[in-house]
Amino acid sequence: MDDETRETGTSGKGSGDGKSTPDRFPWRDAPLSEEQVDDDSEAVSRMLIESFAPVPPDPEVWDRVAAEISVDDQSAPTPIRADSAIATTPSGRSIASRWYAITAVAAALVLVAGGIWIASTNTATSTETAGSVTRELADPETGVVALSLTIHDDGSTSAESAGLAVLDADHTYQLWSVVGDEIVSVAVLGRDPDGVSFRIEADPAVLALTVEKPGGVAVSTQNPVAVWSATS
Amino acid sequence: MTLQATREATQEVDDQRGLDRRIVEAVALRDHGALKQAYDAYAPYVNGVALGILKDRDLAADITQDVFVRLWERHERYDADRGSLKAFLQMDAHGRSIDLLRSRRASAARELADQQKSASSHVPGTEEMAMAELTSSTVRTALMNLPDEQRTPIAMAFFDGYSYRDVADILGVPEGTIKSRIRTGMRRLQLSLGAEAT
Image (cartoon, each protein chain N blue to C red):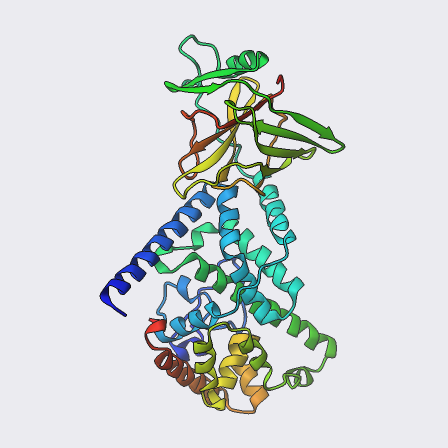
């Protein structure tokens, strides 16, 4: 503890990023410190900080954040993969093969862990432009497009809601794809997928969107609320 | 405040903390949507702090970006039991803004190759500009009601990121005196702000 810290009775453990800050400001990081904290200074410094007027950042700031965390995902562990023992129907056929077969006739029926995924008429569409493709996931019941995904050649993907309901705090949207014979969790998209960016490593044959508990699940037992397939 | 109002306020805080906790738990599970949710809710507050300190939209945007990327990468730094996510992110924005301010000041000082000239470039009273960014008239009034000898060093340290030693050099007052004035000023602020700060 340096002189300044001793004098004020506060302490700072650092910004947590491993960088040391000479002449450090004694109040910063105080809430994270495990050492003695001067309650008066902490409370006052919090009040001062919280008193700054909110100013919305420029819209592109989120795009920059999304781009950075997408790059971060590239070095992250591979996405959660459905348990193959569970993701196989009682007949032994893989879910993926069933999805392919069913989407070929514009309908999908998928059994997962005793639950049932039913996707009927699929009118979802896709478009391709230089450097990217667009996949439109549609409500399997009505065929109305609910979510549009723009997948760039480098795998970076952005979601745009087309009237998808914003969920309550106890639920999240989760995106799944079929790659080969596997159902793969692509991304947990949160309560409102609009504007969310993530990565898709391979161009999938089928995409499905489900509603899950916060944080997502390894294996879904929910009916998809929107689907897209290459054969539609 | 009535007992009922106190209960309702406490419940509101608990609900918000619960939501903050769920957001960060989802971020830990690499939920992009959860980070977007946090950004949508708190980015203006984070940006407001950075802009208030740095007075530069582009630099404030950089800080805002940095704060949310750090939330993504270092989500374990947030503990819902110790405060709201909004306050945590604002504190982070303040700390990084001060770091940037110091870094830029150090670069400028090197370019001038005249440390004393650089230090004397501080114009007493610039902290009032930062104070003007404060939304809360209560906080602003409390600050302005402090004696100059306490308000000025607090503002120089808090808004401009000067170390106590720099404040002492600039104001031409012994460092020990500056520490004492800041400490006394913070206590007076705490007293005048009363229950709000507890």
